[in-house]
Amino acid sequence: MKILLCEDEVLLSESIKEILKINNFEVDCAFDGEEALEYFSKNSYDVIILDIMMPKLDGLGVLHCIRESGSNVYVLILSAKEQTEDKIEGLEKGADDYLAKPFDARELLARINTVFRRDKIENKVIKVGNISLDRFNCHVQTEIATINLSKVEFQLLEMLALKLNNFISKQRIFEKVWKNQSDNSIVDVYVSYLVKKLAMLDSNVYIVCEEDKCMLVFEEE
Amino acid sequence: MKDFYKDKMDILLQTKAQLTDYIQREEVDDTKFEHYKIRIKQPSSVIKKLKKKGYSENLDQAFAQLKDIVGIRIVCPFLSDVYNLADSVNKNFHVVNIKDFIKNPKPNGYRSYHMIIEINGIFAEFQIRTISQDSWASLEHQMMYKKDGEKRDLIIEELKKCADDLASTDLNMDTIRDLINS
Image (cartoon, rainbow over the protein chains, first blue to last red):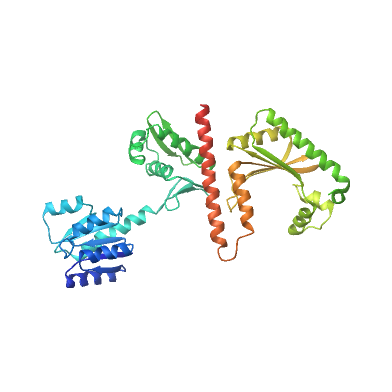
């Protein structure tokens, strides 16, 4: 797990670096905005910790360049600017979290750990009935066979699996999976794809549809 | 070939003709298939397979142990065509064994529907599959020879992923056809 720490106060930077290293993170340190962007362009980070007031280019400028590049790397602003307005500005300009100085090192660590915890949850295999949904490989599997799914098929099946035995409205599925793009009758097409795939796998969970809602059903024998 | 199969040659040719008749008739009956291939196993392949399975290399053993001396492979556009054709084979022949490698793919990802029938006192094999299953099988067959030591596992795994992708696409195409027909 690799972190870029952008902090111009040398002593503070060193102490944060030390804490992170003890907790098994790999850390690069930048001491001004331009150096931060140089590190960012040459490396791949899981988290960027960003001070706002830095020489050459301030933290918000760095943040702007990071987001302009298309990167969605997790950015945590660590700043002495502690007013609500400052926090809102940072978050609205693309930061994922904001921690005001002075701060407790344990809180910083807890916040960084949420990022990695989310990664772990996101790559977990979901098991319902005799099928498993593997997020990393984007496939659905039983003991006898594996069928790869498109990203959209996977999101749809995952959404149904996480609400097993409960109806979800097709409108809600359309909003969440298709983000309201395309035509909402697309939901029925993709449900049909999945129905056929689950049947091919001899799955003991199956999709039940009514006019405007769907559910993944599992009945214990 | 005649030197090898001797007095059994006539029965093989007769079987081949009967199966060819059947499949051409099936086409008229509106069961869709894209193309088919029928063959009598080459003597060299018979010897090779007997050797591999540890049987003695004579004609009696060949007819007793090998169920695919006459083999027909039928390639269909859609998955449901495969199962429809399998139903027809069941009705028209004495089927002695079925292996549904579509529902139960081989560990390498191979998918196809295999049926052994008994006909004219010998066995013959039907292999029925979709176009994409057939294209995977032929590519996999070609690449088998090129798998070198170091990357072998990676190649096997990637080929399996292709098979699992194609399986997904086959099912989607089948669903789309249902949509068109509904």
